[in-house]
Length: 67
Image 1 (cartoon, helix red, strand yellow):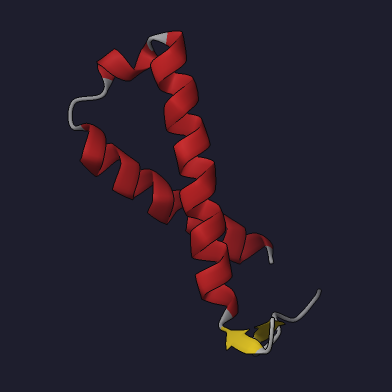
Image 2: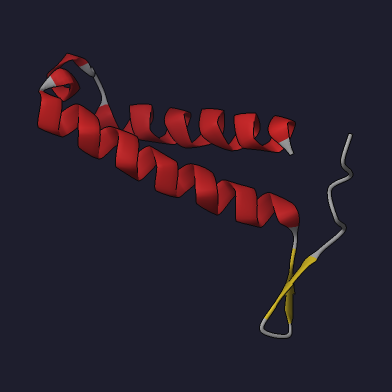
């Protein structure tokens, strides 16, 4: 089991790992929502902004559990 580092250095600036995982969840959500719109499955979503926020939280927490 790997341990999450306390902070990640990027260009001399230190970031918390949760921020990096939330950004990754945001990008994955953008990709997934784009795929849903292209395939036409996005029309079944009742409230798209609420769905997007829930997807970001879900994917970020899955990524956090994996790392």
